[in-house]
Image 1 (cartoon, rainbow, N blue to C red):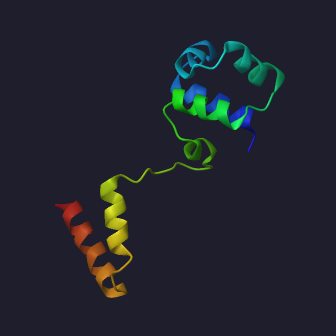
Image 2 (image 1 turned 90 degrees about the vertical axis):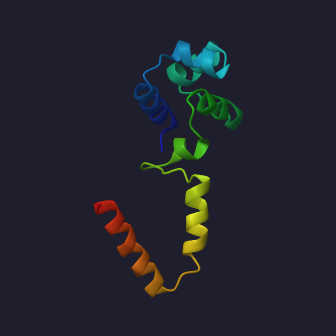
Length: 102
């Protein structure tokens, strides 16, 4: 993954300028200029600050596809799901589909 390409994409999606990003993430504008104009590779600390300013995690930044964050409710559901038998899983899926259709 090209970090600069990903940064540009995330900035475009967020609809913010580099200047505004600098203010949001408390990273000096000169540092961002080095990254964007000279192709400097940001340190992990800088990249974490940038991600924080963009309200995303490092995992989301590096994800190749859309990432789904697990809420506490989904984590609990997944934890319980692991202990169901294949038959119970199938019945649960059918139940959820029926609930969705109503």
